[in-house]
Image (cartoon, rainbow, N blue to C red; front, side, top):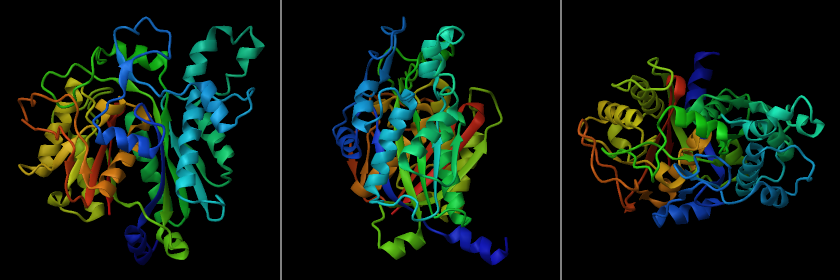
Length: 406
């Protein structure tokens, strides 16, 4: 690529023109916003799965059953749609509709989805019968992560670029990042990006083994935090090139102005004490957005409410922002930690923060971490917001940061 083309790519604006979401606090963007502004958490006892951990953990459940989702989406009853595919299609359809897209392939369009659970919700139910039960065998092909992505793309009618990203809890942020890069490179004009993860016994048992699940409502950044609440959700955003915006005079919800990712290279499931990966990701995003740290008005933190993450992220934030840390909060006390979907869920919330000029509260916080003494915002706060920084950090040291701007 010539230097002039490189400069053009770097300066290409990435517009967000549509959003769709389903989470424990609502089945639409307006419902999620209403719950955020009302400080109404979606964390409850688990009811959708039969597990002996049901009385010892709390989760963020989507209230629609698979049967209800099938009816809403008008999917044939005999179709092999996992809960991952159902939740993802629901949110992706809302995103496309909100972007007022009537012909999805009128421009070079791609679909990038992310998941960590994939078809595990069906696999764990039918695995023992795969060798003997023909009815169960139809779920073998739905196990892998790409199955839900392809099903959603097919249902949307997308015939261009389709791929899946699975980098643990930074997956959706990296999907957004890849979509932006493809637009900047001129490979695509429009990309639907995001992620989806349902609750499953696989994730519940896995996180229980790590001993980081809380038996009460999670308390991000609190000195007495006891662990995370798992959640299920899906969210997608429509990214479009400035050429489409200018040609169709489209409404822009916000711009993706910067992004960066780095690897902590410290531990398979833990972040380093000095938050190197998080620090580097935030630095890269700020550099791309051509913003100084003091121009960030709100940080939607990763904030899982685990002992390791919150301390590591707090240290990294202080390394970037010094003694002038902007207003920050974790919204995972509303939705639970939605794993691969988290980056997209919180991207939607970041755009809403820009649109509404509001900082969403960090629920259940009481006592600051002694090492950093950082205080998140604990009540709804109205202020002028021009730039929001959103963090997503995953197992394997995968650290990603997105910056959204008006």
